[in-house]
Image 1 (tube, helix red, strand yellow):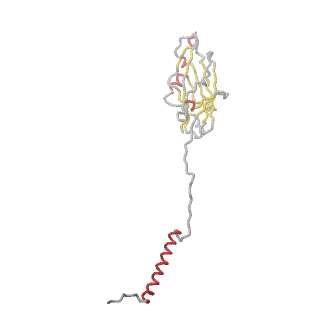
Image 2: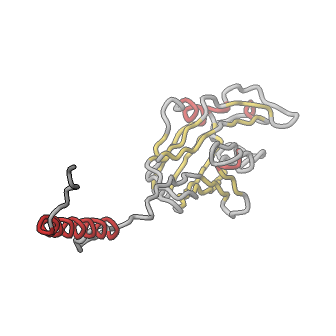
Image 3: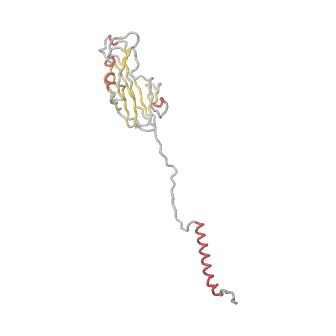
Length: 217
């Protein structure tokens, strides 16, 4: 009958250091896994403000006394940014002009936005319209050719000619002397003169030309 085998004390001692080393290695590995790393240097920067935003380019027109104001946003909002101003008459609105008389009107155009304009133009309507003024009317049909217009901005003459030629220039807008930066106001003067050669046939008549101011950025 065979007797059970037993490891000798010597063999057990040989295995003991190996077990101890394995246990220590496992402990070190566990410690490293819990602390993350044994290295020390690190640096970082976080940028928490990274934004970009659009400005606005809006226009305001005022009469000389500043009592009447029209804005490009009167049409609804900055999304439309285009409005019709019927309360500032650049030709003065006089109904009693006589040959050789001049009516002068001053207005200002202001960039009320936050963005600078790169171009500033004035575009006349394509037609000078003649109509009746009152109940007594002359028979002339070319009043637009008898009404002279001079537009100035400071010392610069923007236009000089008849209302007929002003409307005839509608194919190309008049570029203003300078495009206003945000918050800047540009003054203008309109001088309308009924030609001294106008006779009785030009009585009781009126002439008008629409116009459009435009900023672009």
